[in-house]
Image 1 (tube, rainbow, N blue to C red):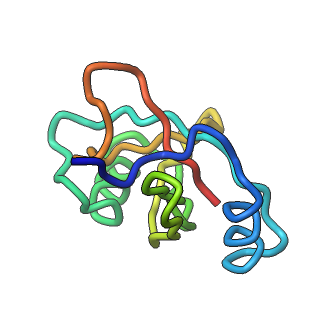
Image 2 (cartoon, rainbow, N blue to C red):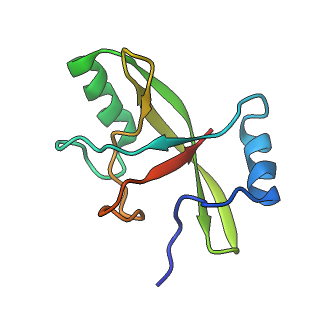
Length: 107
């Protein structure tokens, strides 16, 4: 069964959705590097834990998901900005292929 996942190609509909949720921000791909202790779909507490342990700051925004060519959606999401300024998604997702390096599309 197909599931929603990170869009591989940014279509006009994805751009339209992004412009509706946060018009002045540019969406980017953010690498997912889930911490061993991270809880599935619990981005806000996961990022807060990372900030406590390693510094940096939470960046709140929207994960953009696509299901085939049928649906695009924006989900409230938080990623970690490391002390060096790198954005990293520390939360595991069950809709991504965990055997490869992967990213989320974040606004």
